[in-house]
Length: 115
Image (cartoon, rainbow, N blue to C red; front, side, top):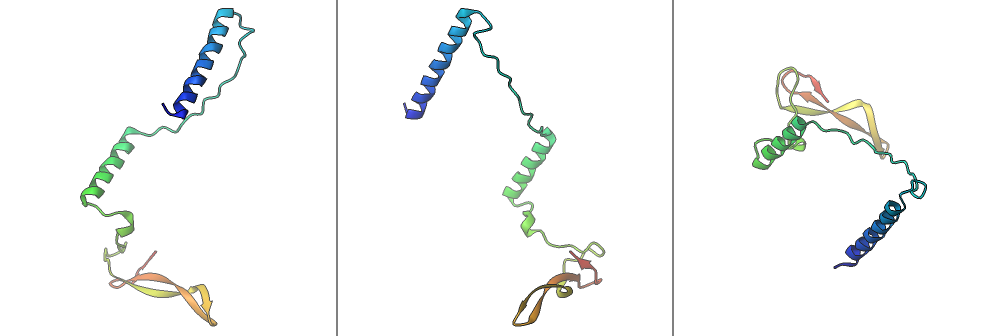
């Protein structure tokens, strides 16, 4: 047995002895009263668990791609081709007094900005 298991057994024996003392005396005054607060854990719907398992299985089989590999899609035309254009309204930082701008994606087909 490991040291941890031995310590657990010793503690369990001590608890048993204290319970025996309480039960043999039979008086409620001998037993200290303690309030126990039970914290509620958030419940998870079984359907959500099943959906997550199905998604993990599809990821493992390669049927779907993880979120990091999902391509951008234009909300107007459905195209997946974009140009990265500097967004002159957002300066990220300066390099040798030259501003470096953030990029925004613009659809090549219809010109819609996609976040």
